Length: 301
Image (tube, rainbow, N blue to C red; front, side, top):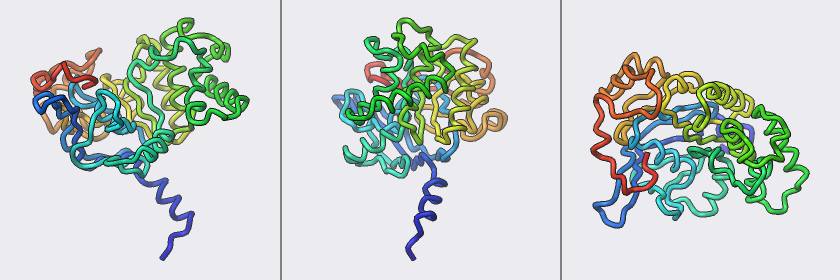
């Protein structure tokens, strides 16, 4: 029996935004000795309206997984990871052996907020032009008035004065630049936001406001989100669940309090004990990530 369009739409809206099935991710080196297995056999989903936080020490595979979900795995850019086992389905698109056209179409539906995004805005463009840039990268002939209205709406949505639109990045505070970067990541109306430390570069007093902003935008926009954070208080504030990575493997999954109160791995036990520490999670009891890190391999976190 052929499903009605409404039935298909309902099935798509209820399907996971991200589905990882026994996925393994590797950073290839010039030789087998230089190859780094960043992620090994991960399986979990991100619901269509869910925020899931990725937590783990440096070298645990967080950034490799995030870059893969954002569509960068195997895209040919230097330092890009490769899927070497299992598969990932993002917004209904399988990533293993994805074509260039399929990748391009998929990335238009994903908002990507890299680490230190506020620091990587184009210094030669105004804040408004930085926000609008993804629109014109997709369609150079896009109506400028329509783009301008969208930029204005988003700048207002991220709680910035509209006068910021005409300012250059160096004229803004770190917190303002991060908000501009968030607006840029959301300008195409993504169905999935992939964010690497969204409060990076924001002072301790402004982090809560940025998180509340992201949570509010997610509720209003109805998108899913996969977000790296080293701060468990941040995770508890904005995520529905966390996925704890250790040495490239999944060692905890669920609501923050449940994961920490019922640890199933020594690393999670150590994480629970150190949850009030600030800064990047360091090597703690149950960890051997330091021994498996290879500094010469780029972008491994």
